[in-house]
Image 1: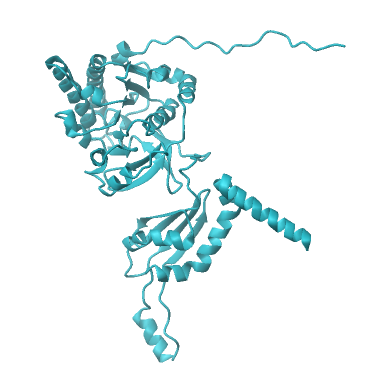
Image 2 (image 1 turned 90 degrees about the vertical axis):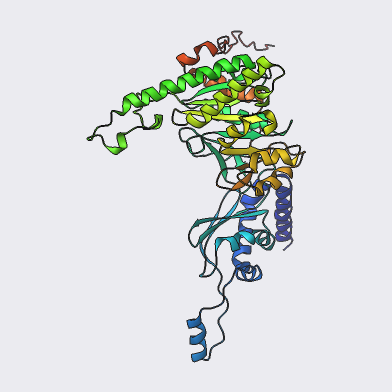
Length: 451
């Protein structure tokens, strides 16, 4: 008997230590089983307490009266599927007549307390079917990306969502993006994850870093063009606009629309072209947009107007030509001058790290997802990397990118430097870097001690 008591104490102690030091391991070993039991045992009572039940139908009441049976109980949403994951549980519910997805969404916080989960989010899959994603621990405290993620052209995993799902940056679905964040908020780490993810793909990277290149120039081996000053940035953007016009001429020449041409072969962007004719897509990363918009003289004002005009043209017309913008900054408001709000309106994907004031959060989400503004200003200062991601659909979620040091990003860019394409229009802006030195091999022979 004593042996079983000692074994039980060891199991309990192991569970406590794992929950404290390794919450992911605790979830996979103990937490998932306990959570499934709690959900199955408490499901009916919790749904009733949260107001997610409907009264019995009239025919069931009439049948109960005729058969002199007790009045049937209220009905809960039916569980279609319960699936454990590495971070929590996924429950798919079939709603009863009279319920809608908003009822479940409004009750997620009560469900979180009732089932003793760390977080609960809901989304409507189709009419009458809602999916609850429950997390068993704080997945954003120590970000661990899953070993297997979806890979597709121009779609890269960059962060982890608060519900345990992977946050992807899909340039074909959301062509242009805006990333805001104060100093030391994790904006640079997010940008490094973007570059590291794109480095392995067939894409041309173009960087504009007016902080003398301290952020992007260490990654220069994987960049087809780089600019470190506003004057160079203007020339580079002019060259990109010219490249965009050449791509449109290529698309027009490849269309050759006749009455016999199948619909599937009519091209309207580069992704409709045959692979042998398709130009290399281009991702333009602007590290600090304010440095391009500020001016102190008439000449600088003229340069600034041309830069903003080029950016607006690329944002409006660049998608079909395979040119995508990724603009970063601390603020992105109308105080930066004319044309800024027009440019911001074209940036569909919005990501806001910790900001210094509510106005900065409004610049990111005020026009697309007002509910996300409050979430953005509540990001704590002691957890860098936490961000709020939203889009034009009004949806938003909290995310955090895994920490990627500058050395790790440099190593990844060096590893894939052979994939850097040469674009004739941008050849003048190709960064000059020394060739990679071969790995040094020690030629000295190991000596053995002899007696």
